[in-house]
Image (cartoon, rainbow, N blue to C red; front, side, top):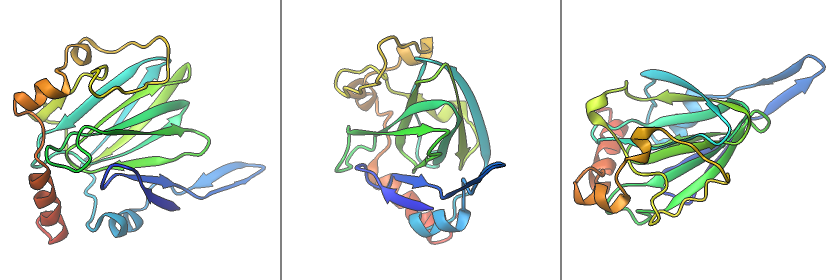
Length: 201
């Protein structure tokens, strides 16, 4: 298993070692000890989500209020998606930037997103199945979104025809979300992460 940092601080890309033979393929898609070593604390698994999307569907950009936020470990178990990560933490040195990773059922990579990071993806195959390991259960009162087509963000989704939910299409821009004080604060995110490191959870 190889773990590397992306251009956004604290976001990781995980590439598993795969063993294949005439029977098929075996791999470790998640290792709690390796992830904890990389992020400095245990990842508490509170909920597992699974979504199936048709080609061109864009989901996101979603995030949760911090604390406690919601860290995620995301992988595509069938098909292919362009997974997009956005730094929404006000005060972060990479605030407003985005990065992307191709997740598919060939390389079987995963991405780890800490609390305060925005997340979305675009399905690039007829059907794509994505799983999310989440550190906190879904709490609608803490859930928010930024418009995935915000021109300030300028995300290149890699598809000509895209569709999204009415909720995501009506989500505020990055500037609007910031003006409404919806975005996480970088210092608070770091403080929360430090509390996990020191055994606060």
